[in-house]
Structures are given as C-alpha cells and as structure tokens.
Length: 554
Ligand code: GTP
Ligand code: MG
Image (tube, rainbow, N blue to C red; front, top):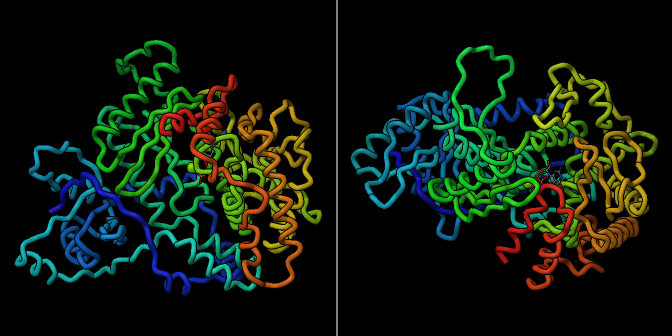
C-alpha cells in the first residue's frame, strides 16, 4: 500500500488557539531549561539521525488516515510515534511515522512499491504515499484500532499572530521569551530536516556506504527559527585511523587539483539531486565560491538546502554555538530578538551580500555576553572551553583547523552570578555596540577582549575556529553605518519607553526608521550590488560567495 513519493509541496501552518494556550511565562521557561540535563551536541545529532533512520514520511488522504496507516505500519514493527501535518490552500496531508527499530523501516520499504506509471524514475527513499484501499480492506484494517494517537504537529506561526502575542505580554522580557518560544524550530521542523539529510545520504550510499550528510548551521545550533534553511555537509567516508588491514580498496585518483576534482564531484551530485531525488528541485550550483555549494529545494519537507562537501568545521562551529546557547537560558531569546530586529529594520536579508549575516549577528551577541556585564560575564570565552577540553574533545579537521574545546557542559565549572533580565540585556546589547569602536577594534570570542583590527574591513569578527579569518568581511562601510544608526535608534527606543502604548517594547524596535531596507531596492539596484560583490578580487569568505547564483537567478 505504500508507494514511493514523487513530488508535491506543502506549507506549514498552525492553530492560533493552541499557541495562546502554550503561552510561557519566563519563570516556567527558565525553570524548564535549567532542569534539563545538557545533551552534548554530537549526542543530540546522533539521536536525531537515529530518529530519522527509524522514520518514514507518508503523504495521506487526510488526518483521519492515521488509524489505517497505523494498522498497516504496525504489521511491520512497533510504531513509536505518528505526527500529522497539513498544508496548502487545498490541504495536503503528511504523517511522519517513527518506528521502534531501524529494521522496521527496512522491512516496510522493501515491501513498498512504485506506481505503474512508466514515466517516473523508480527511486527508493523514505518519502512515500499511502494508496487508498478498497472499502472492505479498509474496514478490516480499522477494526484493529490504533493504540496510538497521532500528534497534530505544529508549524509556522503567522507574523500577525506573533504580533498579537507580543502585544499581550507583561514586559519586554516576556516578549523576548514569547518570540523565542513561538518562532524557534520545533520538533517536526527538526525531524523534517534530518529526513531531508537522510534522503541524500541514502542516495549516495550505494557507492559510498559510510557516507554521512551532517546538518549544521541554525537547523541544529539552537538559533534556528521555523522555516530556516538546512545547511548540509556531505562526507563520502569516515577517515579510519590505524586500520592495519593488508587489503586496500582500489580507488580512482583525483584528476586535476583537489579543488577542481571536488567541483566536478559536486556538479555530479547536483545532477543526481536534480534528476533522481523525489521532491528536489531548483538545483543551483555555486561552484566558483571559496566553499562550493549546491542549493536546492526539497518540496516534500519544504526545506531549502545548502549542500557543501568540505571539512567538518561548520559542524564544529554549530557545536560551539549550541553549547553557548545552552549555558544560560537567556542566550537564545536574546539572539532571536536581535536577529528578528535586524531582519525587521532591513539590516539582514535572506540573500547574502554586503550586509551583516545572521551568523555574524549571533557572534556579536555571544561576544557581548562574554564581556563583564555589571562586572559578571554570562558566557565563558572559547579559550576557557578549550582549557577544559578532554582527550575525547580533540577535533582537528583534515586541513588542520583545530576545533578542540570541551563538549560536555556538565563538566564546566562556570556559573554566572549575573541575574539581569532579558530586557536589560537587550538594552545593554544595543548600548554596547552603539559605542563600540568598529573603526579600530575587532570582536573576538576566543578571549573576552576587543583586539585591534588586523586589516581594514569595515567590521571585523574573528572567526573563533579559524582565527586568521574575518567572519564579517562582507560587510561594507555603508552597511556598517546603517547598522550603527539602527542600533542607536533601538537603544533609544527601548530607553525612552515609559508605557505600553501602541507597538510597545520589542515591536517598537521592529519599526523601520532611517534605513530604507535592501528589500525595497529595485531588482536592478540589487543586481548591481550583488555583481560588484562577486567581482571583488578578494572574494567574500565562505557562503557569501554564493552571490554568483543570485546574479544568475536575477
Ligand atoms: P540562518 O540560516 O540565517 O538561520 O543562520 P545560519 O547560522 O544557519 O547561517 P548560514 O546558513 O548563513 O550559515 C550556516 C553556517 O555556516 C553558520 O552557522 C556558520 O557555521 C557557517 N558560516 C556562515 N557564514 C560564514 C562565514 O562567513 N564564515 C565562516 N567561517 N562560516 C560561516
Ligand atoms: Mg543556515
């Protein structure tokens, strides 16, 4: 009855009354976060990967199909969890079925079939649809009633709903918690991203049985909001040290330089995604960038993917951000508020360019929290984490980037005495950077000092894992000026607010003031911005190079 899925699209939505019921007080959230034991990043990633290995994604007729689907699936093994979501104007329905065992998924997949349509590519993946059955059969199946309820999975909260919630809050701190709790990536969002990674991994597994597609970036570092992109690094094999076997695989040697070979490989992976992967479309290859990437959209999970095949430093960076976000319950709500503010006032833009990125903003928040605030830092420096690293925390990428730092927070003896409210921290963040000497100083997370800038980029944030690199090298002088204007404006708006009139608190800083945003630039103007950027002699580091693609798509 299960048929391998070809293609379809869905959008996420969520029931408003449900959100209101879930309204969280700061105390509740803080208590919950404080009572949770820290799960190290790699453990969490492995848990999610295992969950994806034990899951299938099934398109169904309606939410009512879950009982029948449950009965069907349960004949292959114990179903642990079912989560339903629907989407679109003419709603399409999907159910994630999680089994107890990975072997159950193997069994159900080998029993599944393709449509008899000779026009489809008969690929195998964990994306399927549930064929309607004859009435008789359906009644028979339903008599074995499902013992499991199917969770109605929540998805994106509408902007207007978030705004209503923020207006109803008691104070700015509660607004920040509310924003964070209602826009952060939820369980289903996370499952869908790991299923998307799994699809790619199993596609290449025929030739590369040890291949891994590791999610990194905001999908896993705790800073992701619903609908965030999925950054993936595809590794074709694990490096096995000390394998003394006398039998060695015959392999093809690289033809040409490592870079050109890797570009060819990525081109081929791009073709495979485009031609054979169900649900994947809009494949764009950005291979001239310092880090070549392939962008594509997975419609079945509604996830935009950025795939690279480089080293693991992006994953280790995510580990660092994830740890920092877990040290204190105020960190992530503060990051969310700052990222939302920057997006609302037009400082950031979904496409990369001369403006500050979400990643740089996140590092600005962390660097601020590492400094003494009322003489007490809230976060330790990276050097402190490195000092406590154990032998098992030693990670060095193939190209020599040292990513060694303590991975288990339970072993960190750092506890801040700072008890400031979120609203005070937000105001102080704006205050701190409105006075920061961007002209001569660099921001550094390795140690809590501001260093002298080693070169003339407008903004300099030392890449914590590769200290010779500037994460915000792309930021132009003009964008830095806008940033400073907006940050002063926000500091002033928060400070001068006495009562809750109109769009108060967070909503007041989300209003655009002096800065005509990039979003309002004409496409011609934007294309000029993007093409100048790409023609620079010294291309912007890492992902920002993917502007070439923007030029092509414009
Ligand atoms: P959103 O996708 O905007 O939600 O945030 P994100 O943190 O995922 O940012 P993005 O997708 O742009 O980048 C994903 C990851 O790539 C980041 O978390 C970093 O680890 C890494 N990254 C992004 N930009 C840079 C950069 O300029 N330099 C370096 N070294 N790494 C970067
Ligand atoms: Mg991302």
